[in-house]
Length: 298
Image 1 (tube, rainbow, N blue to C red):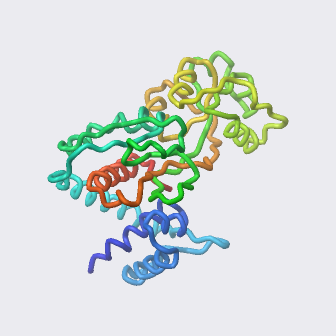
Image 2: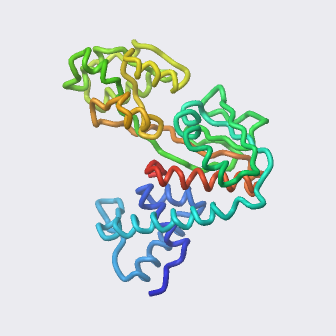
Image 3: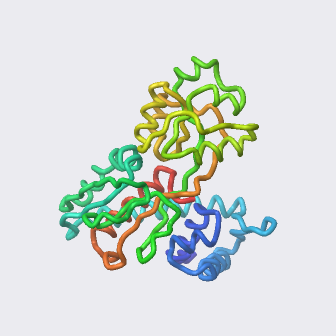
């Protein structure tokens, strides 16, 4: 059997991770009709249905889900092979501005791998004052957290996230556990910047007459997590930045209820630098790393 085109396989992988054609189109820099066309061609070539209509939406069939999982593994292997052999000739100084939480809790725990693959690159990691700030003239690229609206810039969605309550086992024992969502109000609410995320979570959890305005406010996710780990209150965190603390048992999830964040992580750059060799190398490595860790765009 002939191997399907890489473009069609990437369209399937992107759709599987996004759950929607329009998000896949944004990631692949294609029109929605082009993505739909690739998926239809792939179905025809494979000889079985990948997609099924559910109400007004479209989702993968069970067989499509299994095939998409195999495709992701194959694309990851291909990406790794390309990356491992792409280091030659890629070098120079390159500066990336990155939000503090993403930088310290994800990027800094993996960055030596990029250096090993591209030993001739002198990579500088900077942090902005605001999570969506892409104004630093010293930066060649930005990992920003926002709604994706940066006019006159090349913008690529890296990762969507959802927030769920997180606290230390010590705090959980101290308050006698959280049996219902309203119980979180018995502890200090730890906020990143404002009360918006906690207000949305309390509303989703159907907590009546909540008052999220109390608690402690921080300007940096590192500080939010430090306070939560120290048992000073309960935070809202995401899978990407809290994975280490959760796996080590320093934080626990008292509830499964999670709210999708209206903001996401994006790779942002000037259009003039779109073909910069280091940017392409860094972007490719970052996408592969996020996908391999199970926190790629979905």
